[in-house]
Image 1 (cartoon, protein in one colour):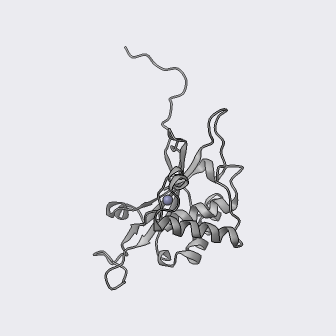
Image 2 (cartoon, rainbow, N blue to C red):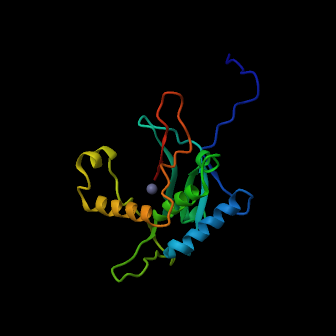
Image 3 (cartoon, rainbow, N blue to C red):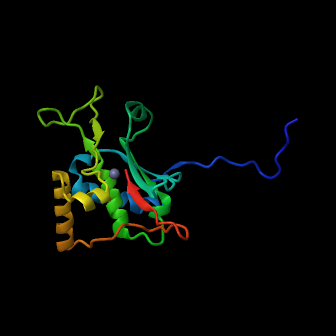
Length: 197
Ligand SMILES: [Zn+2]
């Protein structure tokens, strides 16, 4: 006979939680999203973007921890729900006491950079059979190891451009934040390195 576990039944933890647009938490987040779209992402003006918490991200063996991710809705997703993209955010990072508003803003802007419209050869937005705009996800400008830049310098164009952007940000009015490490690791372990996707 199976043994009955005492106490209340254990509930499965949820990995994702949609952030309601009209809730106390969601309202300022969607307002920031709208502000960033109209300021920097003209082509997304008509995109339907949902925000959701992801609570399952853990530090990997190298100490990277994901704080955001942008997912494009598949054709099937679009049949099921009225969204073109969902931006997943680490609730731990977003609501962390040490996370600055400028970091939240940068994170959301970063995720919006992944969302893009697909254009045809004439430069017109591509549409599907239902007349809906087709979207795509854009990759990062650079992917590189710190150690390679330290050893070999700016050995390719994308790194040169990135270094230039960093210098411009440092010279301009933008505050050059350090690494957005709002969380700290356990004693003796290096702090997690927040990573966006
Ligand atoms: Zn990213």
